[in-house]
Image (cartoon, rainbow, N blue to C red; front, side, top):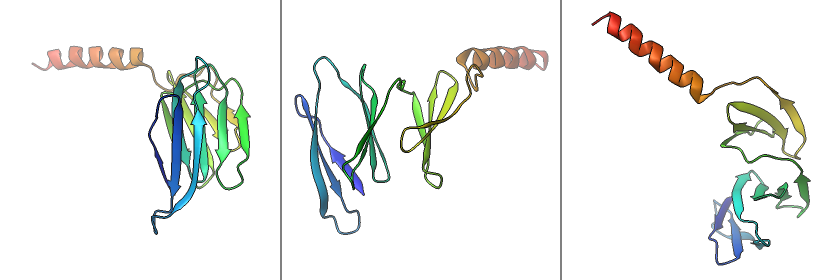
Length: 135
């Protein structure tokens, strides 16, 4: 499947194509809601993850047309899709959360920071101190 889209005014028309034949599988359109911009649109197999600002995440199954809403989903800085397990990871401010493709939160590392810019800055400042010793 290949998802093609281009925002036109307050609408986001989309086409899903068969990557082998190039034929259209489905056409549909999302409408921009009042005062809510699109934050992201991601394709994960036959699912579409659509997030408007200040709205819940919507996971649409393009085969069945069913939509699941995930309340309190924070827009991440990045996604990692784990296709074999049909899960995805959301990364934000050094924190990782794992969700099933139906929107269920599976794991939350809570207050454990996996990475932060402060740690990176501290590492580089220590690195420069050590490099000065060897000069």
